[in-house]
Length: 157
Image (tube, rainbow, N blue to C red):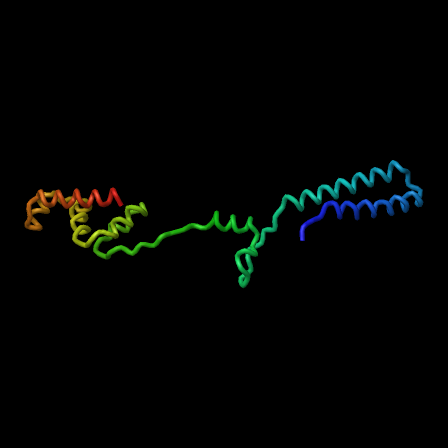
C-alpha cells in the first residue's frame, strides 16, 4: 500500500499536539518546543521524499513471476544481459565461423555447398577465375557470372 501523506501528516500533527502539552508541562519554553517540532517536521518531509524517490531493488524470487520484480531490477538485468547468437558452420567452410557480422553470416549460411566452395576457393584461397574455370572445366565467364550472382545475393540479403 502506498504512503498517504495527508493521513500521515494528520497523525503527525495529532501526535505533536500531545507532545506540546507534555513538553510545556515539563517546563520547556515555547521556542524550544517549536525547534523540536521543526526538526521532526523536517525529518517527516525527508522520509516522505525518500519513500517517493526510491524503488525496491529486489530480484524476482525463483518461484515467482517476473512481474513481481521491481522495474528497476528488470531494467538492470536487461542492461547487463548480452545476447549471443550461435551459428553452426559447415565443417569444411571453417572460415565462415570467423565472420563477426551476424547479417553476413546468416546470408552465407543460406548459400549452397557449391557456392560456398566456389567462394572459399576464390576469396579465401585466392584462386583466380581462370584457375577456377580450369578446375571446374567450364568457361571463366561462367565462373565470373556465378561470383557476381553470389555477391548480389549477399548484398541484397
